[in-house]
Length: 175
Image (tube, rainbow, N blue to C red; front, side, top):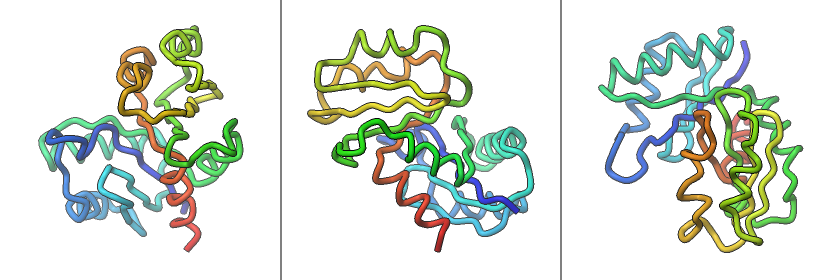
């Protein structure tokens, strides 16, 4: 059995797409997944399964639609893939709350880095690496034009977590 982390996009951000974490865990357990846990209220689901990532993604998206009446894109990574994403972080000295990793549902479309860099300020370096996009928001995301337009510019479904959250997800799977 492999431990996977399912990252739900847009869950419990603002008032839309509200999902209680106990209900999300119950839904995943009802689908037959093992060792189900959640971390914080933003749709980080840890679970064990022998299913491949694509099957897991499809089943979770369907379960969310049927169980909660809403659609949420799900991006799935193994713990080893999260570890690799952490190891590839090009901003190791950045504030972990300001370094983000966007986990893409598929390969980054051609020109992704250029489109993102066109919106970034000098203190917002961006690196596209495989199916992850790293951004260091030097002055935070609140007033960032890049952060505001990120999903639209990206060209592929993705969900973003800060470095602190990704580290914690990896740590939770080790305990």
